[in-house]
Length: 156
Image 1 (cartoon, helix red, strand yellow):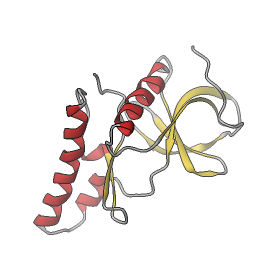
Image 2 (cartoon, one colour):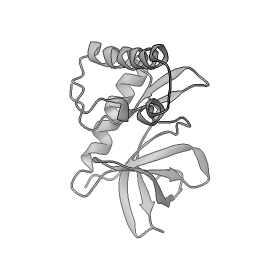
Image 3 (cartoon, one colour):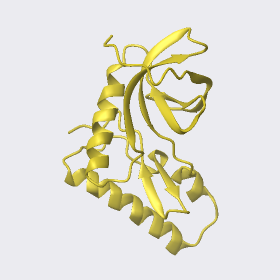
Image 4 (tube, one colour):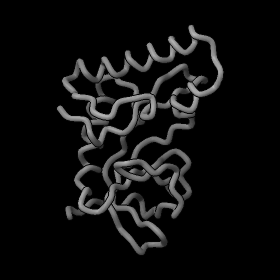
């Protein structure tokens, strides 16, 4: 396993914000603005892969959480040390949960259009968007912003 720097000596909480097919997202202790995505054993390279994709997307104007880097983090009180893709924490609902609520057709269509616009920006950069869906986007009503996440299966 490649070694990565520690994130300002911060440990991650033992509780996960979300468990996905590719990895789990944890909050950073004493840092409400960051989260880290940790991947299952033998997939540690995905932290770097996802960071590289997110960095390219972010620097080219695609709406994604601001990538911070790949760091070694401690889980469960230091019992496990793993590389994690660390990024900005988004305080907005996932799009799939938002779309389950009642809303008129034009609002639903508007949100899908915003999502497709972000996906099109990524495709224009040459990415093949595997696993791109409403389950991998947040929508911030406050910022009127669609935010894509989960790039572990994307290819360029």
